[in-house]
Length: 514
Image 1: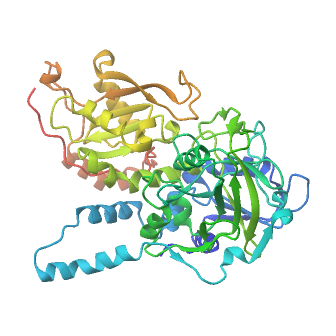
Image 2: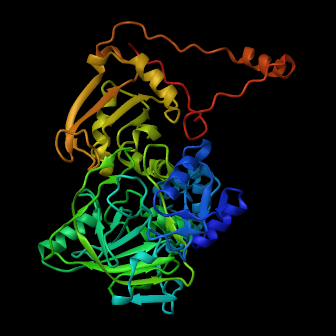
């Protein structure tokens, strides 16, 4: 079962042997980040960390412990969602997508459990006092300097909130959005909201700014881990992230009304910052910030948030993350998205067998895609289809290979790709939107993309030579050597799979006419 709040999640991590409690006093400025970075780059993502004695910017001891790297391993991502394997979540999505109403009464009755499960997903609104509002500080009592926000890199413009659920509402349709954006702390009651132009929260702000309306915004810290993850997921604007979190955790997310604005917040949050953005005010400088690209994103102008209230549990835990040169904790959050959203991607691009965004590609710089190739030119069709899929439109390089290639092993994917391509023939360039954080694009958020067709080439694609087979030992010889191996006295570690999951079992490609 998925944990209901951050405390339950931390306990589950500790019970699994993946938590280290740090009792040594450590500074929120740079020291926590350096310790966490070393852990995140260790094999398997390193342990989750709970810093119990944190020193604030001015040297005072913080009343709040800091938790970091909670999602930073495959095991912890599964604990967050209450599953043994992330593939089981994508399997549930596949079942729902394939569910058809049967003709007979018995068949319809058999569907009722599934329909009942769907009915549990909508979030519920709590009527009584919520745990996240045990302490309420308003107006002049608000002092963000008492919260151990981290300065993560020496060149950062200041302290940052790095693992928030930023809650806004579409002013026209009333649909809630929960996003995960970095937020710079400017003063005791002001913040700078870095929401990129491609994000839904930014679209809400543009609409309200155009109408001259003050925009309410809430920043929730902590809560059930499925909701925290959902804030990072690339959902369509019409899907409520708390609804999606309810589906993931198989139980509704419990919400409560904010104290000073007309928005709902997770009842189980540790801390909640309530506030507003005034469109009549000028934008403020935000940044620089050491980002997930491994480079500093430069300072720019973003909206200022006025904090009207801070609500909290009586002894809140402050959750944070760290981004920088990969691999980092965000790789495991991104990998969960990769696995969970594969069935949805197949709705519009059904020939996709699997895909993978390796850590060095930082999600949007490199995507390996394995397809079931059925006709010439299909690799280019898939590239263009992917560039038309939401945030996949920001992908800089897409490499398409045949269905028998394990794209979750980047070494194998590159080995096949580099053997299969004639660069002039198989590489295509196109223009399109780029990630806001891409410092190399020719213009801000606009530049070129590259698609590489690394599939076997057909005669219709201009290839008239014979395509060779891969070198593989026959199964009988492998079986005999497996049996004798313990007697050979050879101690070898298996080569570490550089991918993030077990190798897929797929049938070999058909021999197409050349």
